Image 1 (cartoon, rainbow, N blue to C red):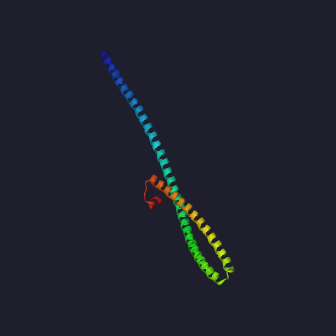
Image 2: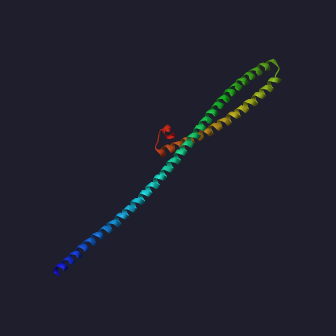
Image 3: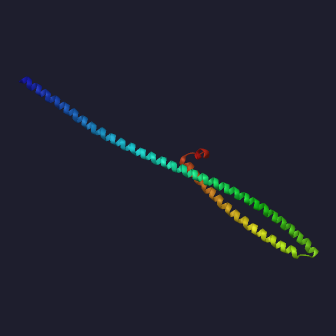
Amino acid sequence: LDLSLQRFSEAISTNKVLRDNIDTLRRERVVFDDIYRKLENELAHKKQEMANIIEQANAAYEARDQAQAQMATLKQQADREHMEFEKEWRELGKLIENDKKMKEFMRSKARGGDTTTPVKEEDKHRKKITSNAWDTAKSLVALSANQEKVMSYEEAFTRIQTATGISDIDELVQ
C-alpha cells in the first residue's frame, strides 16, 4: 500500500512538472505568435512603402520625360524664331540701306528739281520699314517669352534631378 501511495505521489509530482512545462510552452507560444504577427504587419507596411516609392519614381520619370520633350520642343522653336529674327534683321538692314540710297537719290533729285516720284517711294519705304520694325519687335517679345518657358522647364528639370539624385542628363533620360 505504501509503495502504491509512493508511486501515486510520484505520478502526481511528474504530472505537475509536465503541466508546468505545458503552461510555460503555451506562454512562449503566445509571445512568439505576437512577435510573428508584428513582423507580418511590419513586412506588409514595408511592402506598401516600397510600392508607393516605386509609384513616385515612375511618376517622376514620366514627368522628367515630358519635361525633356517640352524642353526639346521649346529649344527647336527658339532656334526657329532666332533664325527668323536673323532673317528679318538682314531684311531690315537691306531696307535701311535702300532708305539711305533713296535719301541720297532724293537729295540729288532735289538739286535737279524733280521730287514728286521719289517722295512717294520714300513714303512706301518708310511704311515698309515701320511695318518690319513692328514685326521684329513682336518676334523679340515672342522670343523672350519662349526663353522664359525654356528657363522654367530647365528649373523643373533641375528639381527632378535633385529629387532623383541623378546629375547626368543622359542617365536621367534613360
